[in-house]
Length: 354
View 1 (cartoon, rainbow, N blue to C red):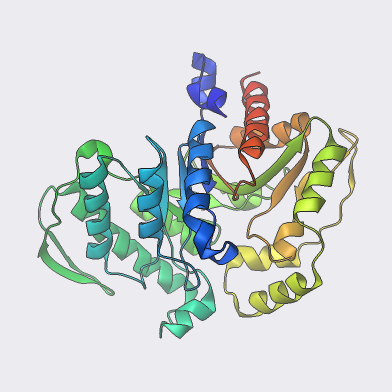
View 2 (tube, rainbow, N blue to C red; view 1 turned 60 degrees about the vertical axis):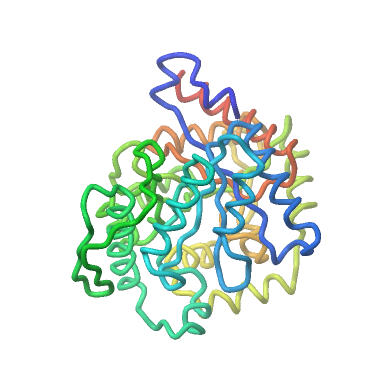
């Protein structure tokens, strides 16, 4: 992956991509081993050349700001991509977290602005705001948060959801440590919100040939994709690893079905309606690499691409060619897995430049 990020020539630089891994979740690991797991995945990600690492948030896992502190303590340059849920804290509190981490570590974080998450989590907190209005709220939240961090003048806003007057945050954040902002852009409301605040819209990609439904004319580099990758020298080995890591799980399918009944996520509903038949891809002789097995067994919330380095690299090259410059990977199983993924991105980069 490092090879891709170094951009060895001018042609490759025009197609440069940023890659984020994802942090392990506390619900999946014993408390006694969790800090070590976070430290390990942080170091693997940095060694592989990742820009940063997404740190989740929801009612059932530990606080992402505290986890991000662990990430910063165990790396030299990796950025925690902190998931920010407006229901959990005031925008001033989020700005204070960014400011404090910058002051203590001299490091930057990135922000993954949320509007939804798990619907039952929001209801448990007394939040009944409809889907599209939650994005309107996130726009106000993000505007206040970023204005505070830029610190050019006191912030005043009389919004529908937030009101502040002559507000500042200290310590001031140096200009070079102002965070990048990402936001879910898979629904029309999310895409509109990301454009309003100048965020990178993160989408869940569809198979090649269906990009009209999710690229939507976005400028090159203005959006990214959330995806899992399993690739090896040959497709059969990649699929063996994939099914070993994500076996069929009846209880998982039931949990997935129940969760989708209460979810108002546009993308999750679209994925749930899609059939996941593994069919032959006549262009390569491999099974179609686009795979929803982990999603349908409630193991993760993104599609996977599985196959040979060459075939998966072609698929990623297609996503780069239609304008994606940011990739957020699923939680890596090992440092070795990130090396396999790095090989895929090298192939993808070569294909796009060619």
